[in-house]
Image 1: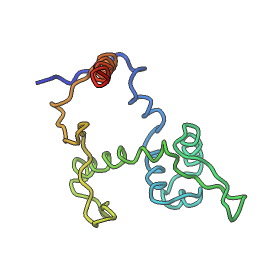
Image 2 (image 1 turned 180 degrees about the vertical axis):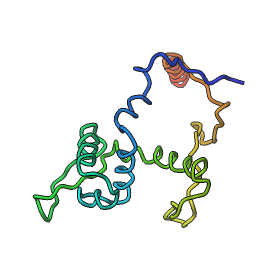
Image 3 (image 1 turned 180 degrees about the horizontal axis):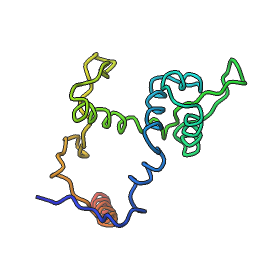
Image 4 (image 1 turned 90 degrees about the vertical axis):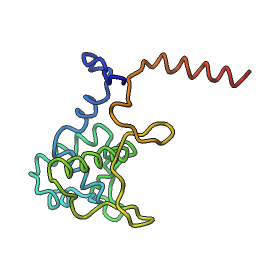
Length: 164
């Protein structure tokens, strides 16, 4: 069995600390959750979250600064600002859902309500998991770390075989 072990002293080469730095803390996640639920205006965030004005202002500015949200003037009232998710922000949805599912399982003990479902068939989404290139779900003991140069060398060797 392969051991999952990455060099923990090379923090600068890991995306996790950078992601945590960008998101900040609990309120940033709650703002993001509200944005995924269609909240767009400062006052609406205040009402939905029960957050202090100064904290909301600070967190929204930070999420804009790191490119997770963008500020846009409202089409119907140029004096009002909307906060919209960017593609970078939208890419956080799987991470948000994984954290929510983890919280339901290990903290709450039950699925929260409402339950997120597939719009096509109306059934609940599956647990977020780690998947292989071919779509198989992988357990933690099926994972290994590999150096990028190894993977690139194998990929280049495969391309050479295809050409021949």
